[in-house]
Picture (cartoon, rainbow over the protein chains, first blue to last red):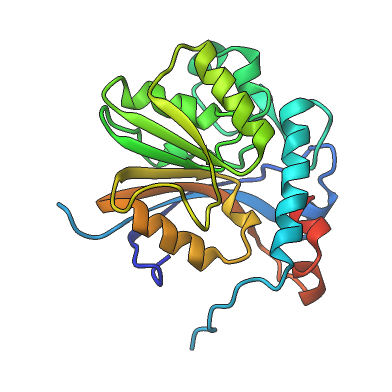
Length: 45
Length: 204
């Protein structure tokens, strides 16, 4: 994201979102998680 | 020393075709059983406000297939222009409309025709006329330069092999000072090269 020009990158919570789904095995193999983050296009304030 | 960026080595057209097939099923048969959760149970798992979610018709929520909650990084403000990349059946877009109000606007972008059709029908059912759903790709958004306050997305950019191109495209459409609030997936174990090139693993 920084290479694209974004700043103020913040990372929120991480969730084991695939656990218990009908076909979760591949996600489990690679320890896959759902994350959320934000960032800002500089300028304009 | 950081490694030079390179897009993932997959057949992009084949990947897009497979993703469209998968999400056509999510639109038409959301309870079929996928490698991801869907609908209200997923919204509850991701800490969406269930009083708001429960007020929505089943058809609006049932095809929701996100991986986290973009709104957990900040509430949208009245009057903002918002783009939802990979808007699916419109669940996050419709929540965004409720936050930006009548003075704001939401543009959903999705490449799967069945999802766009369902999202338009869902918004119409709710009487929302300040949301529109456009055909397009994350890598080539049908949105004007520097015209957007917030870009949201949920579980979509992981399906794009060239992520730097996607983020540069998001940067193009955002106003200076504009914000992204993105939910996506990460893998915490190294992926072997053959797994990266395996389209079946991309789409589950």
